[in-house]
Image (tube, rainbow, N blue to C red; front, side, top):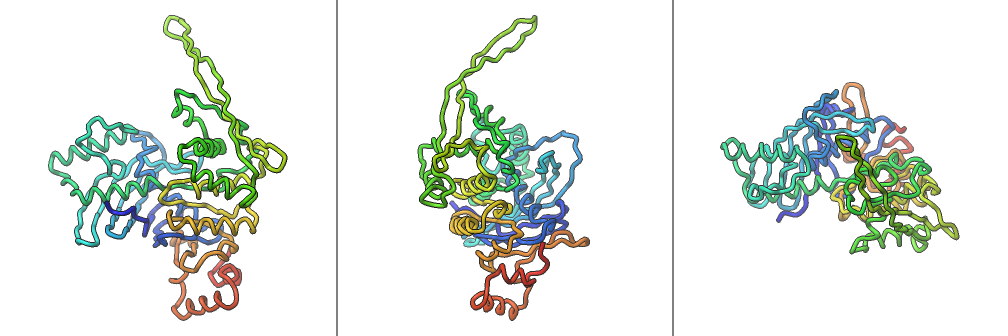
Length: 420
């Protein structure tokens, strides 16, 4: 089985401010820096389109909305394989400024680096792991069932050749990568005062309960779930890092489970009233800071955001983590520790950060930094800082970093172009 690939390159065309934006990503840590409005967030959201293509979530063929057609090209590389995608994607933007994919057309070119084999396919990524020998497979959406039938019907008719076994393995690993992409945005956790002091779960309808949990409550549920998992190693590591022996954000975190019940009434035809009793579980998070026990809505915004970010970095079993502005509401001393943590975990998870903080640059290497700019005729442009300099200029930068200062100082002095 080929190893899990990484996203090596992505090209976004006609997507928000990305008229034709190309970026060759670092396999471990990529830092996008540029002024406000240059398109850094648009790049992260464009990468999240791959996540939607892999899950098939949010698709809604037949919905009449104002849509835009974008083109996405992506290259995935592992030690032994390559996978190149060319896709046209129809999306609309919902009320929370997130893109919902309505439909897509995908073309893939799969290859092996050792045997020099190639295979082209138009199979949708959302059905990459489907097996026609399992007709009773559970489909997570009507779209998945449609794509499954459409693809394999094409195979039976001879219009789509069967994917070779080695290609299926590559495709499955690319699908696993895209399914595992996660997004952290500081704006998700603004104003923890709006966070509920508790949340309720139905003991016999957990999935129905989770669909109602949003925003601040969702991250609290994820912390609760991790604390109750059979393997608590990652959660215990999270508590150790944020606790009194680590960053000292909190002294402890507990969750009270309170069994409750409720009665649901429904009216049948003819006016007959039926009732149904539901057994629920009320979850009450409690943060201990010093001698005080606080509810989530009593935490400062900086504390809540930092807890959420560190929890994502440590416990998310993801293949790529997209982090928008990790510096927001975080003290510089604490930010240094967070960045070291991110760099450490980039050895197992591909990390892609956006920032406009020169302090973030202080903690990373030039090989990890990409300058993002916006021009009217070209839209969002991304350049690796090494490619913005001659070899002599880059050597001078290296010498400057070794003898005089850091990358943040260099940016402050205008060495990387305009600042926000």
